[in-house]
Amino acid sequence: MRRHLIGLLILLVAGLLYPTVMPGSLTVGITMLLFAGWATSWDILGGWSGQVSLGHASFVGIGAYFVAIGAIDYELAPWWSILLAMAAAMVLALFWGRLTFRLHGAYFTLSTIAIAEILRLIAINENWLTGGATGVFISTLPSPFGIDLFDRLTQFYLALAFALGVIGTVIWISRSRFGYQLRAVREDENSAMAAGIDPTRIKLKAFMLSSGLTAIGGGIYGMMLSFLEPHILFFLLLSVQIALTAIIGGRGTIWGPFVGAVLLVGAGEIFRTTFAEANLLIYGVLILLVILFLPSGIVGELNRRLVRRRYARSAQG
Image (tube, rainbow, N blue to C red; front, side, top):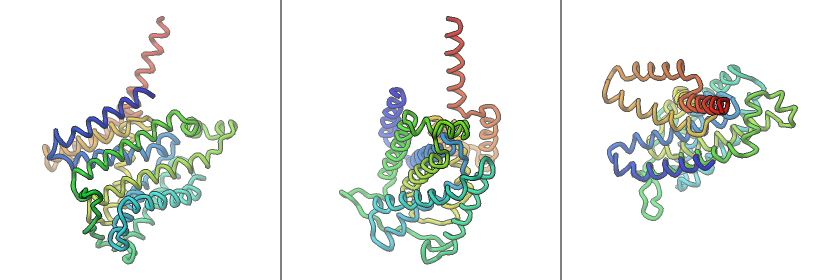
């Protein structure tokens, strides 16, 4: 527990120093922190409870569009819009989970793609609600205490707070009864039921928490983009990127999704600027190599090796 709290403190200090050290890369930093938060949120469902979703872009879109619609139609401050988005995402996850948690493995994953696609089509075709395929533009936002919410530095600190908050939540989960219940359901639902745990209830709680946290990051992303299009925000590729970030970093670990975000966003930016048109090929090869040779993810593999060494030392002693 202590080392994870120290890790949070290091992330906070590094985040506060980042704008000074790399003032020209604030957008990259925001993207990295948002993906760290999204992937960590996704991992509550996909890693800790073992339910792989490819529909989390829906919750990003909900967060972003709530901020946009709240600002444009109701002159609502973003923090109220984000709270409403969080509540809406959790209610959606409740019904979504009740429909799909009777399915297992790949069937559940496919069902998340199907429902996410339905939500994408609704966002594209319901002009009165989302602006349709043409999208919406956030032209004004309030300035609390004179703070410009369109300013990249402000958005960076909001993204930093989001990432810290989500990682802190997962640290708490890892030490709580809820965390033990999640792991029990992930390992064997029948054994969990024998121990008095309701797997469906636990998975629903994980899905609701995961979706609500993802929507918070979506609201910040909406402020960052300003111009919102359903093709981008509800796109399957965004869901895949969020899941890959957690899988490559290490599912079911506290810091794996953050490591995955640093690697994928950082490497993606380096390859884009250095290798131009070949960047996607190199980026794809990097992902493939990690998946093939580190199936537990980077942090998962490191944890596994540390455990092996401890057992080896104890056996020798």
